[in-house]
Length: 288
Image (cartoon, rainbow, N blue to C red; front, side, top):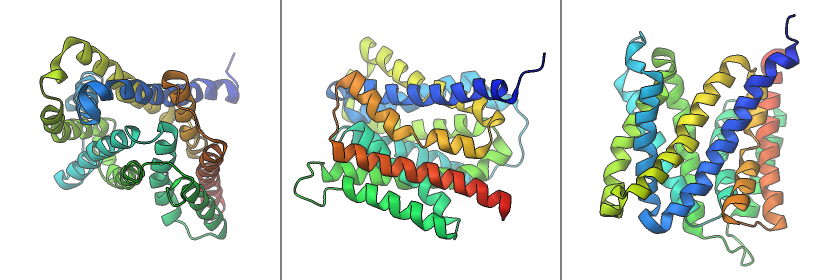
C-alpha cells in the first residue's frame, strides 16, 4: 500500500523538529561549560569536533564536485565560525531564547531584502517590534547590551552564511557544511586555546564538548539534510521559525532560564514574522 502524502511528510517533519530540539539542547548544555572554559573554549570544541564528525559522516572528498571558488568557501566558513563565536558570547550574557530570537533576524532579513511586496513590510514591522521589545533601550530592560550586540552580530553572520552558502552549495553539495566547518574550526580553535588553556584538554571537558558538537552541529545538520530533500521550502521555513521558542523552552528545562511575559511576547513577534515571511515568500513564488 502506498503511503499517503501526510505519511510521507511525517519522517522529514519529525527530522526537522528533532534537529531544532537537538541544537537548542546543545546550546543549553554548552552554557554549563562556560564557567570551565569560557564561551571561546566551548566554541572551539564545538567547531573542531563537529568538523571531524561531519567529515567522517559525509566524506565530502569522495563526492565529485564542480569547480569550487575558494573565496566564497572561505567567506562561508568564516561566517560560520564567527557566528558560533558571537552567539556563544551572547549566550554567556543574555538568555538563550532571547539570543536566538535576535539571531534569526539575520535569515529573516535575507528573505525580506529580496522581496518588495507590501505584506513583507508587515513582517518587517513585526520583527522590528519584537526587536525593540528585546533591545536594552528602556531602563526596565535588564539585558546586557554587549550580549545583545553579539546576538545582532551573529544575525549578520547568519545572513552572510546563507548568501555565501548559496554560492558554494551548487559545487560542493552536502560537503559544503563539512568543509565550511573545517574552516570555522581553524579560525576558532586558536582563540579557544588562548582563552581556555590546558583546561580545554581535560577528559571531562572533551567528553562534554563532544556531546555539544553532536547535539549542536553533527546531528541537527544531518537531520536537516534528510528534511530539506523532501519538504517544500514553505514548510521548512514555517518549522524553522519556531527556533527561538524552542530555544527558550530548552534553556528553561536544562538551566532554568525564565523569561518575562514581555520577552515571550517579543519572541512571539519574531517567530510570527519569520513564519509569515516564509509562507508569503512561497505564495509569491507560486503566483508571481
